Length: 232
Length: 232
DNA sequence: TCTCATTTGTAGCTTATGCTACGGAACAGT
DNA sequence: ACTGTTCCGTAGCATAAGCTACAAATGAGA
Image (cartoon, rainbow over all chains, first blue to last red; front, side, top):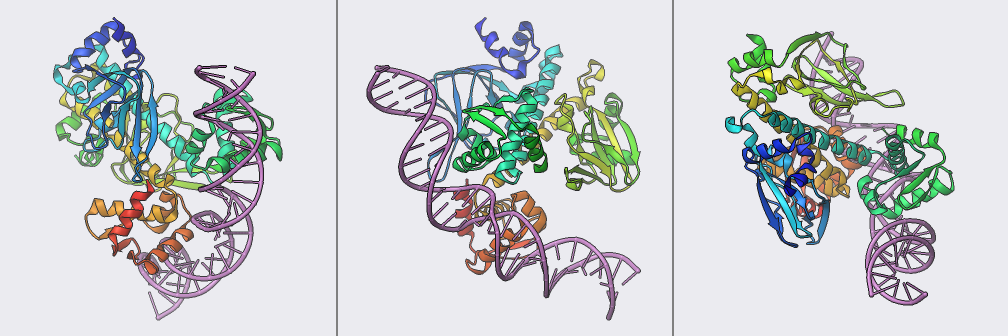
């Protein structure tokens, strides 16, 4: 069955067998909804009670600034989801809009369904709970990581920390940032031109690295390390 | 029993009856540890597998900057805990130190114990899971809220947003910030003197509010609202 | 290969904000 | 009441970084 393959892309079902997904499907009051391109999937003031998992297509989360223009928060690909933390935090509204950027298929799972006593005690239940707890914990980690960058003082420190952290992740002096300059500037909460200016200085004046697009070649790891650590 | 009263202070046990706490105690492989003042409770590189709940005393979380000096992250009071999100995110180390600032009593709960099939199916189990999911979700909300302030551009916008949000929470033109200037400056990620300077301007030049210590009396709500909204 | 759109780098000006240092106020403990 | 400590406001200076506008480079599609 095609659906099962798609569901398996979602990290919330990590470790599930096909049989378990089938079993879970009913217990979780799962339902599948199709949206066509441009259609609104969720809005700012919704109080989600279901986790919304994208099976196929593309969803985009955005807010509308009070000037009226849209600010994209995130673009979801297959297997990604939204609303998880809102489901388990009653009364908190979503805070952003979601629209289908392409024709999309979505799986809704009732958040509370895992608490029912009627849910049986299949192995899948504890697997799912473990996955939910892990998913939320990873989100916390991501937010705390981002906070580290944002609160770091000084353009140079931010840049050095980002590159050094990527180096540690990727274990190579040639690192890929995994984002373009705009995304990077937003992630570090600085302006793009200022960031470019400083990256140029670090390259030309201080010979710390060279770069081309998203690829950085580190030339003075120690300098980066020192800057990165002095930051925290 | 004294312990039960203390355990009930912890939000992870919200909704538990005394009987359920007793029942849970064994299943959760709970253990109680006493620390004396100054003693190390956990360190940076620990990989927590137990949630550490403070029953009595005072714990302090801090990091040591590479200059060597300590930066306090948080001070825990009775019923608060640490390590939750680390337990459910295998491989992520704690990232900070914890010491007992006073003689303290601590409750450790094995994070994985809720998954055992031997845990029975007392009502307490789903209550606990619900509480865990809610706790993590609230942490996410708090981090996202803080991110909003930090990424907001402009001192004036930050201050206005903070005061306006407090007004919305407290529904009164006389609001309490709930933190002192240092804490506020750190929360907004600005320097305290610069913040004080701007608060003075908003008071003297623009008559938006008056203040004394943590108490703000709003005089021009509309102006604050406008600034707060233009921020996002 | 030409065109168009997107991404990236550069330049120059402006200013908001960081920083250090100091003085006064508030408060607690003896 | 005296002292020490913490908290808060003020002042002045230095500068890092924002912003706008433009140019160069890249890449995609026809």
